[in-house]
Image 1 (tube, rainbow, N blue to C red):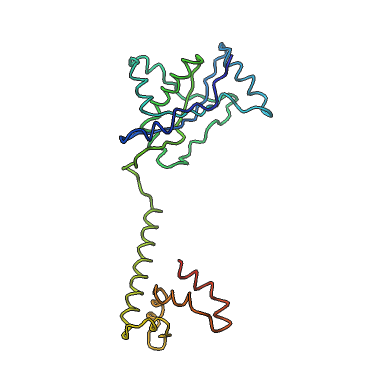
Image 2: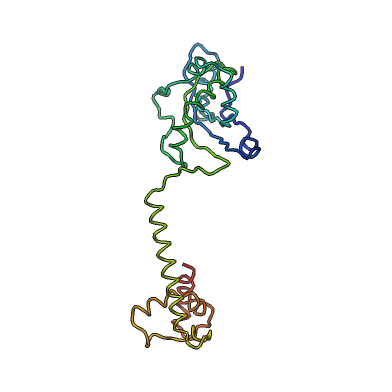
Length: 238
């Protein structure tokens, strides 16, 4: 008498990369519904009770190709499909069996769209092979195309704003430095122009790409400049 495998996955490669059309592969975290009349379930619980040697075999990870799942469900009547769905129930000993945080991107969206359907497909597989039922929730999904309705939070906007500010400052500094180069010579970028500029202009030139490149590659001529050379490298890179 075999127990259900802890991991049961459809073919990932053929699901996502055998078609140009949108395809999605989801892994669900599932727990077998208690059924003391089932010899298979009793075997699972007995085996799992030795926690020092064995994992909890009533916790399953099932990977579904959504298209295959939908094809399997198409063969069933509406009544049979509804009968497959299992509502959430407490795990044995009321232990917490799954953390519902959205650890992966778009998890809440995938659960809203596919949680019920994948629960039905998981139960179809488990009932056909082991005459047991389960509850499940999506852990993560992978697609062969980008999700177009991705939502941006304030961290995205902060990143974009900071990136834009840095780009504007660097571009302005490099352009201003080039405007000061009346001789059109590369030697200009090696000169110290601080005495001719205001404090604001001096600060701006600190971000000139060409000037920083020469500072980075030039040989230090004082002990302090040698000690602080790493700061020039860091400033140029950032």
